[in-house]
Image (cartoon, rainbow, N blue to C red; front, side, top):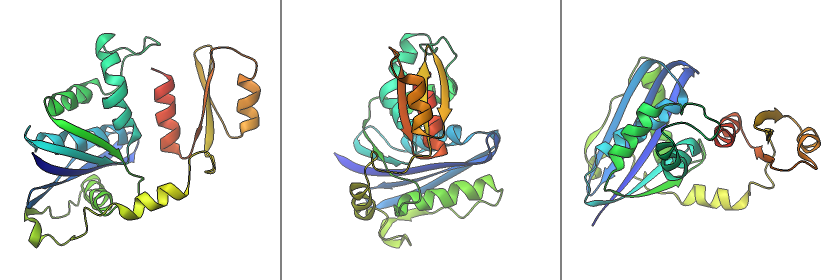
Amino acid sequence: MNKTTIFTDGASRGNPGRGGWGSVVVENDTVTELGGREDNTTNNRMEIMAAIAGLSHVGNESQITINTDSSYVINGITKWVKGWQKNGWVTKTKDVVLNRDLWEKLVEAGHGKNIVWNYVGGHSGVIGNERCDVIATSFADGSPTDLYKGLFVNYSIKNILDLSQVTEKVSKKSHSKATAYSYVSRVDGKILTHKTWAECEARVKGKSGTRYKKALSLDDEKQIIAEFGR
């Protein structure tokens, strides 16, 4: 079975605002860069679009690894989407699933394919992710960078498949010890964010059926809110 590595990223200038997405597909001895834009979109939609484009470019005969810095995309396609489909595309709180049109396209793009979803931190030294960020932001800004399509031997980014640096960084800094951006809690179905653990603890302590989690960034906070809203 052929091995294919895909890097993806999305960007938006405003949320919603002008957006762009980028994908780099390394397949056998070739590299294909993909990119696109929307005028009124969100970062999450661009992240999903990048994954759709990358997967749609690859056939069913490959072992595919997708590297993305979007936990929203990974959790959505590997954990949440089956429940959404079963429940008629509504969450457990009876809200309509956001971005349903793109989730359905992502499911279709991955149908019958052997896929491993791999989370990589944004701007953490992953060369492929950094290249996708350049592509995505250039499209969002209306000045698309030139996209490469051709032999790997002629590609300017020779170390694009090297993930060793980020793996080392992640292993040295666990989630539990990282500085909190905020805390998210859900009590009786209502979700709130808190700047300190003391505030969060005061809300959830002694109450049954609560959920709470530390967020490390604004994007992380949004993903947790989406998770708690399922």
